[in-house]
Image (cartoon, rainbow, N blue to C red; front, side, top):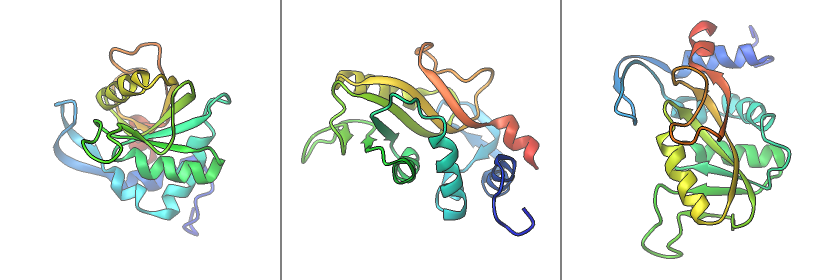
Amino acid sequence: MADGVIHTKTDLARRIAEVAMLQGEFELRSGQISNRYFDKYRFEGMPSLLKPLARAMADLIPAETEIIAGLELGGIPLVTAISLETGLPAAFVRKEAKTYGTCQAIEGQDVSDRRVTFIEDVISTGGAVKDAYHLAIGSQAQILAVICAIWRGDGAPAIQGLPLLSVLPVFTRADLENAL
């Protein structure tokens, strides 16, 4: 990677770790305190990282997927890039239905009776995924899996309360920690 071009998944892990892995004391969405934080906006805002990450995430999409759905907010740039990479239509999952306009929680595509794969940035326990899952099920979607850029949780990737939902990470916390 001496030329700055990302040639391998290892190169991508190293660059994401260099750009996005912060040291300090951080409170996570789950309420946990961590001395390491992965700032997704630092890699999602860089085309040189977003494009190869979208390719890597696209490789994990289950073949039967009809729609990919990005979770607000960090999943939105990822799902857009993956949609451009794959040609799959993208939906956008809000944290809750808006109270104006269409008043929907899921925008961009009608997910009812469709096979949907969620796209998320960083997952620790999966609270946001669990919330989105219930919104999508309420819209009659069939959720196949969730693909994330980084699994930072403990143990095997899984969403608390949704043990049957496949979690497919491009990288784990250890992958990025070991990349430097």
